[in-house]
Amino acid sequence: MLKIKKGTLLKINHSRKGIFLARAKEDFKISDEWYPVVLATERVEGSNTWWEGGEEIPCRKSLCKITVFKNA
Image (cartoon, helix red, strand yellow):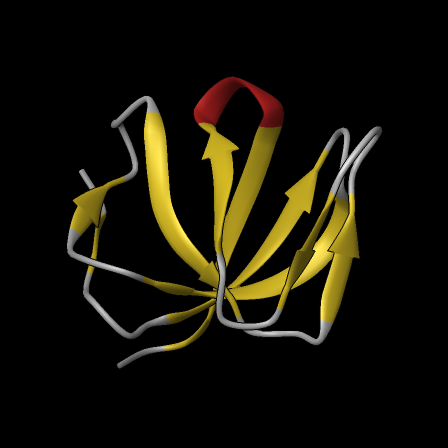
């Protein structure tokens, strides 16, 4: 089971928000339902809202695929 460490840079392919970079807010496992991540890019727009860089962005396991971009 893959464990992601706090501060790891991740590439997230989200079915509703598109592709963006985020950092792990805390340690978590890939098997968790929700991924605690903070947006590392300037802005991401969802279907009816947006997130600015540095904000926590909700990422649910069933809606996105994550790839480790750079380890912490």
